[in-house]
Image (tube, rainbow, N blue to C red; front, side, top):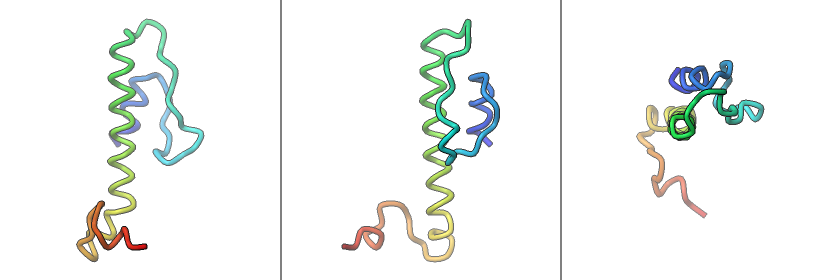
Length: 75
């Protein structure tokens, strides 16, 4: 999983993307700040992609509903 590969690059162990305890790991000693910031952005993007697939994947597979679909925003 992309999320955990990025976590490993940041020196952290694997975690579930939806875990409260996962959080963003601290910058490893010796890693450039720009590299760290780029990996943190990738980590957040991977988490968002996982969330989209986890929550909207079944809706899309069964009903053809995508994120942002008007059916999801009814009041």
